[in-house]
Length: 233
Image (cartoon, rainbow, N blue to C red; front, side):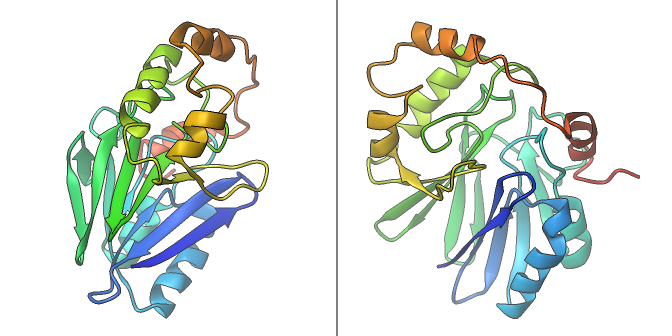
């Protein structure tokens, strides 16, 4: 399988491009509007056919490039069926699968950061990869104080869904602010200061309720734009 991890330094966002090496069919996860030209160049250089642009959730910190990728490549757009993004071609829910060549993306519903958060699981031979968006970060997690967020719901999503994956599952986060690129289920279960084994749901809720974070800089622009697949006109 072809795999590329791409980064937007302005919003600390990871975009993931995955493709079947034989058929060249591809999917992209969490594109950024300002990086569409970069992503399109990689897609063309590798001779890929972009099938679906997937979103882990309606982002508040950047504007998606999925609408532009749909126009450029004819790719379908995918978001959660409870996200409120009526623009999407595919409104996904738990258990849905998206095929690209000999591979597929399995959809897990992992709400808590937002109601419509999804985690995408891809299996490549003995290797399992999970793209967790903002639900689970490297040694952290997404905030739960806006967009219908719920700390208790996020705790259960991570513990019951993501941590139920094999221990060696590679976790690829939606963002990182400290230079991390990947982690594993086992690492986060043992070392995530918010979500490791000994942290109870009550303790997690208390942690999240006392973060007192400022709103994302682009929130007022990003959320309405992302409900329209990145189109602001």
